[in-house]
Length: 144
Image 1 (spheres, rainbow, N blue to C red):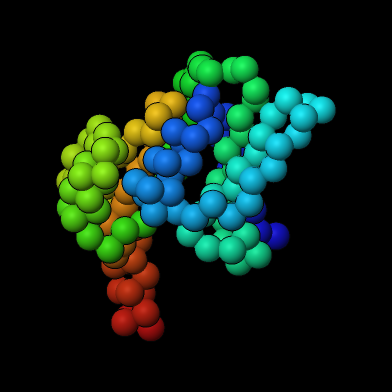
Image 2 (image 1 turned 90 degrees about the vertical axis):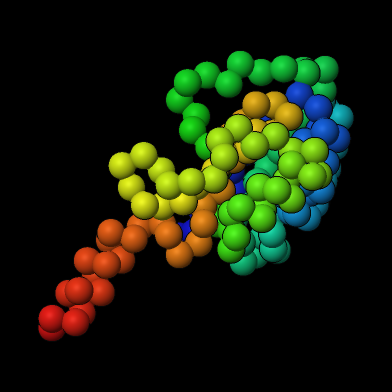
């Protein structure tokens, strides 16, 4: 089994595509209108769907706003340089809602940005996530 995609309902497909593609650097992989159902699907990501998990943006025609609820958390993206990435996102018109820094009660370096619909996207500095687990695993290997 493999995780294929996460679906987000968006109020303005063009604004969302601009954010995810121009601000976060994803590519539009495919897009299709469904006139009978009055919706459009756009699949975006960093690589082809056959090898990568992607995001499905669903635009229901005529619906321009959703209540996000309190069950949904966020999408996470690993980055090589979180500080430069956040600066780049700001320069491209993106909204950083939590500046880069260590997470509470941990050493993973994170930041959060927000898309046009208010969905949160977590940025994680690669190499800092799960450091306690990584150190524990490395220690076990050394002692074996």
